[in-house]
Amino acid sequence: MAQNPLRVLVTGAAGQIGYAIVPMIARGVMLGPDQPVILHMLDIEPAAEALNGVKMELIDAAFPLLKGVIATTDVVEACKEVNIAVMVGGFPRKEGMERKDVMTKNVSIYKKQASALEQHAAPDCKVLVVANPANTNALILKEFAPSIPEKNITCLTRLDHNRALGQISERLKVHVSDVNNVIIWGNHSSTQYPDVNHAKVTTSSGEKPVRELVADDQWLNTEFIATVQQRGAAIIKARKLSSALSAASAACDHIRNWVLGTPKGTWVSMGVYSDGSYGIERGLIYSFPVTCEKGEWSIVQGLKIDEFSRAKMDATAKELIEEKALAYSCLG
Ligand SMILES: NC(=O)c1ccc[n+]([C@@H]2O[C@H](COP(=O)([O-])OP(=O)(O)OC[C@H]3O[C@@H](n4cnc5c(N)ncnc54)[C@H](O)[C@@H]3O)[C@@H](O)[C@H]2O)c1
Image (cartoon, rainbow, N blue to C red; front, top):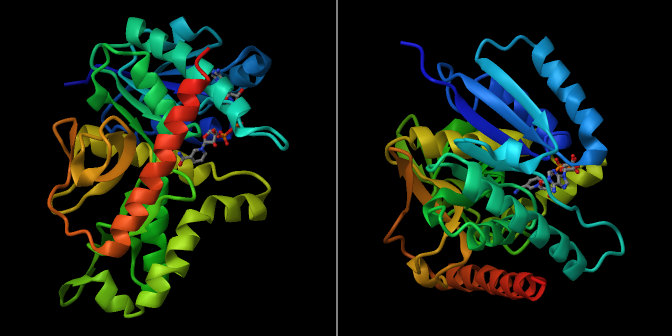
């Protein structure tokens, strides 16, 4: 039987990530090859013409799963009855701008979009915030959409997770799909902590810990961490543009696992509302290892945390606490 289409909102859809993600969604990369979709694309007035160009291309691509496209600059129209909201639109930090000025702009965008989602989205809408500062934008969205359950509001750290998998796979010359259970803790920023203490590789002789196979703690504790933390900057340097393809792909991975589940025995990293697990202050949007089943995520419990990890997990939490305070000070 044909499934009913799901409505997927992409904000900032005329931007780089928007251009990369909408064809992925329309091809079934996000919600599976049997799930029809209706795309809701939102951008701001100066980008309206470009947005319409993206809509024209979506029509021209004749995607079998794409049952409709809405391209709009009206946030209410964009949010109407959406089941999934991927929040990519935001105000980027420009040279010479103070952090507080950028935060003020984003707080005001996320406050407004939170209300529109709360009033017009489907009641069980799942929200993924991609735009930076992703964790804090998600927190603002949560604060200003109190009727959306906090478990439905997340932010993207899957790109960092996938980058960590990629680095281990390159180092060990194994396929990336054989590497599992890395963890990104904390903020989607350079204080994030990519942790391989529980990561495994599937080999012909069974599962092996990444630490044992790499056999170079010095590399894992320094260069590996820095490479993952700084990967975004390295891409900007090489491409003169920020990562869009990998960010779009990671956003699809995030939603697909959230909706359709994580494979047994594996977890992924998601920025989610902290319930105090691992001693992380409640109420922050913090990246944890999670498993997903039946459309719900749960934080993986009981992992052993050594002193090195503890310090790094606390440092990134501290940055999020500071960002939260800054965001609140911007609420005028
Ligand atoms: N979490 C992650 O892993 C991750 C990875 C890469 C990029 N990012 C972030 O994602 C965001 C988008 O990146 P990009 O490269 O696509 O940027 P971009 O500048 O190419 O696109 C952003 C789009 O958002 C639109 N926009 C601005 N304000 C808006 C509003 N109020 N409502 C709707 N749309 C609005 C802009 O007009 C633009 O089209 C940035 O904040 C970037 O830092 C996050």
